[in-house]
Image (cartoon, rainbow, N blue to C red; front, side, top):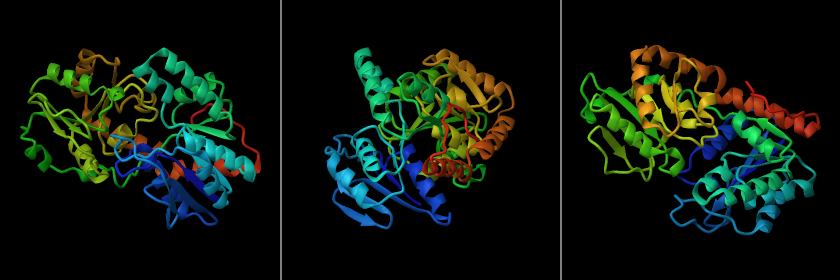
Length: 372
């Protein structure tokens, strides 16, 4: 079986989608009888191994992302690759190209709805934009044989928009790359922290839905007994004394070291569809303090962290203090076991492969239920 993925969400500093695709192709490469290919935007048309690029213009200030403008070249390229199944990883031009190519070839098509486009754009541009995008998403994903959503809440939203063939498909975590053994005692010294200060961490891009302002307001309430390390491009650099910032893209190894060396993760995001960095933190043995919103309320289990009211620095500060009044080390161990049990990439991708095979056989029955 030849599986082809196509997406514009693939750039040097890109996040969860690229992580998913690289893990998926790595796992499937070890499975007999399978071949995987990836079609993504680039500066020019090229092929190297299983990665193929078509030219597309850069998005200004878009962290290296490129946006395909014309559907036909992508549809034609997909058809020339002769896939047995196509998966689209964004809701734009490449998704329409994938649907058209699959229909022309008579092969199953899958759309993975990684981010909540109507809510993200609605937050910025209003209810009218949100409603138009909901109709757009319902129309687009109605063309696929299967639609994957990374959490139950997102699957239910897709169903509300009229998408029928929805399946909950969590992402996974590299359990070796994100592990407590990557702890570096020297990190606290480099940050100038005393033995009794608690180190909190957040890693990700600085965008409105991450609510970094809530994290900073929380630290103002917590005071000098707590210190926050912010990691990611665009992070604010004018911050209080109990905040340190690494304002750039940080490779996974650097993030893993910071996570394994901290005492807890702080995550105020309200639009997470999986919350990959929270799962990576838990894999590093770190308890999580997070907003009770989106996928975080689904994927941060009882005993592995504390949830708080969204966009409420007072309640987030309360949750941090509550966490450390308990046994954060025991919570971290529970968090690691939870991720091992549910989000190992091998298990996640094997489950996905079973879904692909059922689609090819025409025997898949969809239901909005958790897998694993």
